[in-house]
Amino acid sequence: MSPDTSFTPDYRPTVAIFSEPGGLSVALVEKLLANFCKVALVSDDIKGWEEVTSHITQKNFLEIDPAEVSPEYIIFIDLDLTKKTSDYEKLIKLYSKSAAKVLVVLPYSFNIQESIRAEVIQETLKEAGSDFGIIYLGDLVGPRIKEYESYLVRVLMEGLTKNSLPLLEGNYYPVNVSDAAREIAKSLFSFGPYG
Image 1 (spheres, helix red, strand yellow):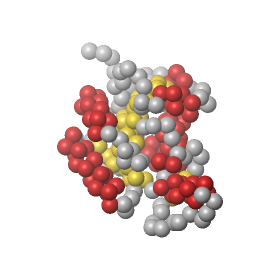
Image 2: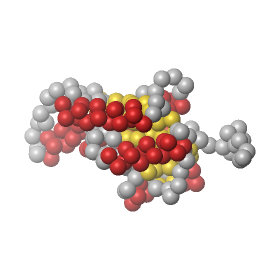
Image 3: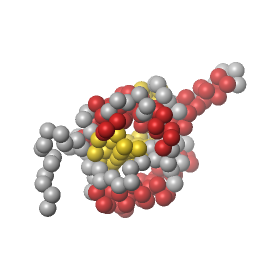
């Protein structure tokens, strides 16, 4: 039996983040490192992660695509609902191995197809276990935001590139990316209900 290291001065909880490099995920990495966590980034875009985290000085607490990870916490970000079923299966497999607390971040949307996809994801996670929390985020605004992370930014960028006024129909719920990262980290470490 290995000794309990959770109360030693150099102990840091490990958080695995399943995400492509983007504004929210980078803000989360920065927030978690500032809160004395180890961060393991699980992604296919290793080169992209190396570029967007080049400014981070705490490299010894940051791993990009580690071969093996056993986190206490997992954050899974799917803001454009394009993650494959195999990605969710990888999440569920890691959860069953580590029994970590899991937060899944999905878009808050009234789009019918996105709502159907979100319901399928919810059912898949319910079947896997009860330690999954889901956070629905509005349209992110702020530094380093990629178009896939925010429908509002995507519409505004299309309008600017076409040199015309963007057509803003529907409901928008802008959320600052730094505020979103702070609230996600707070939810991750809270003892209350998930999400």
